[in-house]
Image (cartoon, rainbow, N blue to C red; front, side):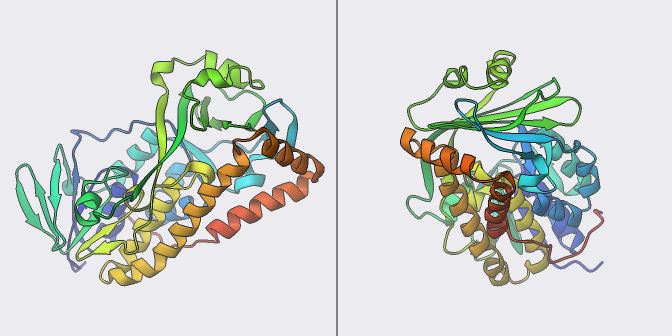
Length: 368
């Protein structure tokens, strides 16, 4: 295959590894810089909806990820007092959902990324718009630089210095994985000032997530919530719980600057309401590989989409945890009064409108 050009990728997470696979398959000579000495992922579970799975298919690893899926099962949406608001199945809400541990997804992507392209233990200290990537050992110029270095992106800070790109939400999030099968019921509990979810994972494991509005900083807030939330909190080693404040990245007017392009959280970190952080990153890199020689096309294809998903993710939290007893009561009454089939259709409609029926601009690739 004729080499299209030289691409440098900053960051070895989901977006960076995906970009390495996609660009290499599209004919680029790729070098990926990861500051850690090995690929590890501090995190917990991650949910992959239909669009993320389509992107993983395009990267050639969709089957490996789907093999980690679990059988569909009953899932409830309840309120903080335990009242059932929606009684359905997991697939009714999100379609082809697969939940995996972040470390497992990283391992699958790392195995598919060309080993000779990867430089671990390489900390990038500066990137210029002309495509120059500087590490502690020297500088190299590329035809394309992919900034996949996450929420605290060094590249974004240098080349997109606009004020207030990072928005703090004041919302605390907790995520953890238990090495026990998911109990019944799974699903979500929608509270007044927070929410909690229980999701089954392959290998007899359970992914639990929770979030709470400003002023609530302890998991103890959830210990009197409906079962099985208290028992799942009691069963975990809290030192293994990932705790952080949710932040958002305001999507820049331009996702590219000179020879440099933003992908994933570096360009559009969003609230996890739709579970689309990884999905948007994977869409980014597959789209980029198809249009890497003209970043204006990538811009047109991605900016409106990620902006819309980010907005829906932000305002969706007004439903899942409205921050008001009155508003929560109105939400609960509306859902109880609505037939299950109509409620599910409504949630699916919101998700579909936000995500659309996304398809990769390129077909399945075979990692080299």
